[in-house]
Image (cartoon, rainbow, N blue to C red; front, side, top):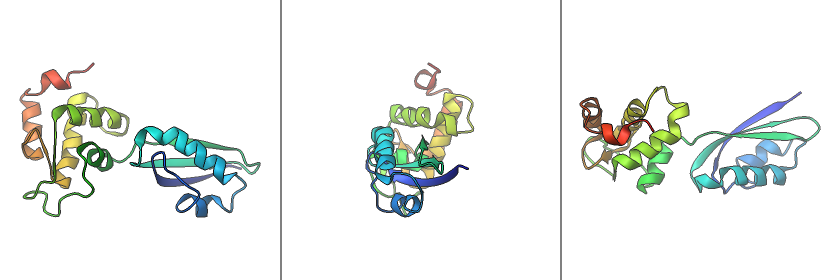
Length: 159
Protein backbone atom coordinates (compact mmCIF):
# COMPACT_ATOMS: atom_id res chain seq x y z
CA UNK A 1 0.00 0.00 0.00
CA UNK A 2 1.40 3.37 -1.03
CA UNK A 3 1.79 6.24 1.40
CA UNK A 4 2.38 9.89 0.62
CA UNK A 5 4.44 12.68 2.14
CA UNK A 6 3.97 16.32 1.10
CA UNK A 7 6.64 18.92 1.93
CA UNK A 8 7.94 22.32 0.84
CA UNK A 9 11.65 22.23 0.03
CA UNK A 10 14.12 24.79 -1.35
CA UNK A 11 14.60 24.02 -5.05
CA UNK A 12 17.81 22.10 -5.70
CA UNK A 13 18.81 22.36 -2.03
CA UNK A 14 16.84 19.63 -0.23
CA UNK A 15 18.77 17.71 2.42
CA UNK A 16 18.14 14.80 4.81
CA UNK A 17 17.34 17.25 7.63
CA UNK A 18 13.93 18.78 8.33
CA UNK A 19 11.39 18.80 6.79
CA UNK A 20 12.29 15.71 4.73
CA UNK A 21 14.36 13.64 7.15
CA UNK A 22 11.83 13.37 9.97
CA UNK A 23 9.08 12.51 7.47
CA UNK A 24 11.09 9.93 5.52
CA UNK A 25 13.07 8.42 8.44
CA UNK A 26 10.41 5.91 9.55
CA UNK A 27 9.70 4.82 5.95
CA UNK A 28 11.38 1.99 3.99
CA UNK A 29 12.85 4.36 1.36
CA UNK A 30 16.51 5.36 0.95
CA UNK A 31 16.37 8.95 2.25
CA UNK A 32 19.52 10.04 0.38
CA UNK A 33 18.14 8.67 -2.92
CA UNK A 34 14.91 10.64 -2.39
CA UNK A 35 16.87 13.83 -1.58
CA UNK A 36 19.04 13.44 -4.69
CA UNK A 37 16.00 12.85 -6.92
CA UNK A 38 14.20 15.89 -5.47
CA UNK A 39 17.29 18.06 -6.01
CA UNK A 40 17.58 16.88 -9.62
CA UNK A 41 13.93 17.64 -10.34
CA UNK A 42 13.86 21.01 -8.54
CA UNK A 43 17.25 22.40 -9.61
CA UNK A 44 15.60 24.96 -11.93
CA UNK A 45 13.85 26.59 -8.96
CA UNK A 46 17.22 27.28 -7.20
CA UNK A 47 16.32 27.94 -3.57
CA UNK A 48 12.68 28.91 -4.14
CA UNK A 49 10.27 26.92 -1.95
CA UNK A 50 8.76 24.13 -4.06
CA UNK A 51 5.91 21.78 -3.08
CA UNK A 52 6.99 18.14 -3.45
CA UNK A 53 4.96 14.97 -3.03
CA UNK A 54 6.80 11.72 -2.34
CA UNK A 55 4.77 8.56 -2.82
CA UNK A 56 6.42 5.39 -1.54
CA UNK A 57 5.73 1.67 -1.35
CA UNK A 58 6.54 -0.83 1.40
CA UNK A 59 9.32 -2.30 -0.79
CA UNK A 60 11.19 1.05 -0.65
CA UNK A 61 10.32 2.19 -4.17
CA UNK A 62 9.20 5.79 -4.53
CA UNK A 63 8.02 8.40 -7.01
CA UNK A 64 8.29 12.15 -6.75
CA UNK A 65 5.87 14.78 -8.04
CA UNK A 66 7.16 18.35 -8.09
CA UNK A 67 4.60 21.16 -8.02
CA UNK A 68 4.97 24.81 -8.98
CA UNK A 69 6.16 27.18 -6.24
CA UNK A 70 3.56 29.51 -4.71
CA UNK A 71 2.94 32.69 -6.71
CA UNK A 72 4.34 34.87 -3.92
CA UNK A 73 7.61 32.90 -3.96
CA UNK A 74 7.93 33.32 -7.74
CA UNK A 75 7.32 37.06 -7.42
CA UNK A 76 9.89 37.39 -4.62
CA UNK A 77 12.44 35.44 -6.63
CA UNK A 78 11.82 37.40 -9.84
CA UNK A 79 11.86 40.82 -8.14
CA UNK A 80 14.71 39.97 -5.77
CA UNK A 81 13.29 40.64 -2.30
CA UNK A 82 12.84 38.52 0.82
CA UNK A 83 9.60 39.67 2.46
CA UNK A 84 6.56 41.61 1.36
CA UNK A 85 5.56 45.02 2.62
CA UNK A 86 3.97 45.44 6.03
CA UNK A 87 1.83 48.20 4.47
CA UNK A 88 1.33 47.08 0.85
CA UNK A 89 -0.96 49.98 -0.06
CA UNK A 90 1.65 52.58 0.90
CA UNK A 91 5.10 51.01 1.16
CA UNK A 92 6.25 49.24 -2.01
CA UNK A 93 9.14 46.76 -1.87
CA UNK A 94 9.78 46.06 -5.57
CA UNK A 95 8.68 46.68 -9.14
CA UNK A 96 8.04 44.09 -11.84
CA UNK A 97 8.11 44.68 -15.57
CA UNK A 98 5.21 43.38 -17.63
CA UNK A 99 7.59 40.78 -19.11
CA UNK A 100 8.50 39.52 -15.62
CA UNK A 101 4.81 39.35 -14.68
CA UNK A 102 4.04 37.43 -17.86
CA UNK A 103 6.86 34.96 -17.11
CA UNK A 104 5.44 34.28 -13.63
CA UNK A 105 1.91 33.91 -15.04
CA UNK A 106 3.18 31.39 -17.60
CA UNK A 107 4.89 29.33 -14.90
CA UNK A 108 1.73 29.31 -12.76
CA UNK A 109 -0.82 28.92 -15.60
CA UNK A 110 -1.61 25.27 -14.79
CA UNK A 111 -2.35 26.13 -11.14
CA UNK A 112 -4.42 29.24 -11.79
CA UNK A 113 -8.13 29.54 -12.48
CA UNK A 114 -7.43 31.75 -15.49
CA UNK A 115 -8.12 30.44 -18.97
CA UNK A 116 -5.78 32.81 -20.86
CA UNK A 117 -2.60 34.86 -20.43
CA UNK A 118 -4.40 38.13 -19.68
CA UNK A 119 -6.41 36.68 -16.82
CA UNK A 120 -3.42 34.73 -15.49
CA UNK A 121 -1.46 38.00 -15.40
CA UNK A 122 -4.31 39.66 -13.47
CA UNK A 123 -4.27 36.83 -10.91
CA UNK A 124 -0.51 37.26 -10.41
CA UNK A 125 -1.03 41.03 -10.10
CA UNK A 126 -3.47 40.34 -7.27
CA UNK A 127 -0.66 38.66 -5.35
CA UNK A 128 1.56 41.67 -6.15
CA UNK A 129 -1.01 43.88 -4.41
CA UNK A 130 -0.74 41.91 -1.17
CA UNK A 131 3.07 41.89 -1.28
CA UNK A 132 3.45 45.60 -2.02
CA UNK A 133 4.92 45.13 -5.51
CA UNK A 134 4.30 47.62 -8.30
CA UNK A 135 4.00 46.72 -11.99
CA UNK A 136 5.78 48.96 -14.49
CA UNK A 137 6.07 51.55 -11.71
CA UNK A 138 2.31 51.68 -11.04
CA UNK A 139 0.26 50.30 -8.17
CA UNK A 140 -0.70 46.72 -9.04
CA UNK A 141 -4.36 47.54 -8.28
CA UNK A 142 -4.53 49.67 -11.44
CA UNK A 143 -3.08 46.84 -13.55
CA UNK A 144 -6.39 45.02 -14.03
CA UNK A 145 -8.04 48.08 -15.58
CA UNK A 146 -5.07 48.60 -17.90
CA UNK A 147 -5.24 44.98 -19.04
CA UNK A 148 -9.00 45.26 -19.58
CA UNK A 149 -8.43 48.44 -21.60
CA UNK A 150 -6.02 46.54 -23.86
CA UNK A 151 -2.90 48.43 -22.83
CA UNK A 152 -0.82 45.24 -22.62
CA UNK A 153 -2.44 43.25 -25.44
CA UNK A 154 0.80 43.09 -27.42
CA UNK A 155 2.78 41.57 -24.51
CA UNK A 156 0.04 39.31 -23.13
CA UNK A 157 -1.08 37.91 -26.49
CA UNK A 158 -1.25 34.12 -26.56
CA UNK A 159 1.83 32.56 -28.13
